[in-house]
Image (cartoon, rainbow, N blue to C red):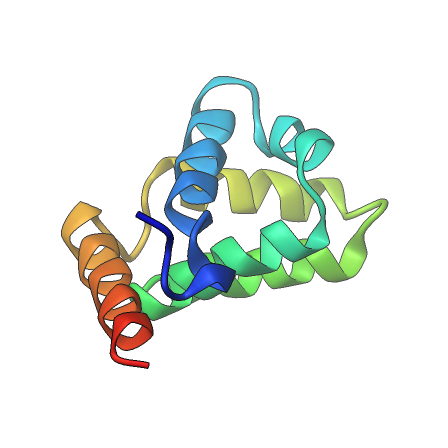
Length: 105
């Protein structure tokens, strides 16, 4: 089934990639594979899920690319590794809401 709200199709995947990257190798590994648009997409998903501190930090990282501040990267990595401000249920609600809006068009 195609994603009815195509601009958000990969956001849950990107969030998973970001979490795994931060947990295993650090946020740098995510930044090596994905660009600013993907970083901003996952930041939007996290903001909608209630994780504004992470979303704000990711936005600052995106603004600082290609050479974001090391302290900012470390801080952002810690927030993501700790899942600060969100959980699986919050993400599921956001994704479900986005899918519902997309299918009603």
